[in-house]
Length: 75
Image (cartoon, rainbow, N blue to C red; front, side, top):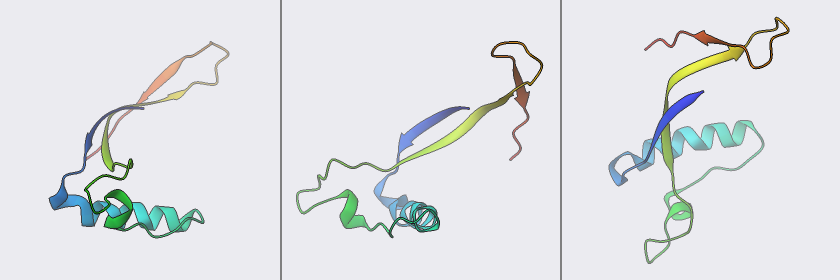
């Protein structure tokens, strides 16, 4: 997959954390909160990014090394 990523801004942080937390819990993790990505000084060493895929491919099982078959992305 190829994607473009950017840091999540403060206005979108709550929604992004909700999405991230659902996935985290599904995989045995925990719920994440705004405090996890920002301490009292506004720094924690953890940043939240959103990536949007712009290209996707799968490897063909045809015996050729690294033969990638494009997959069409839909909106």
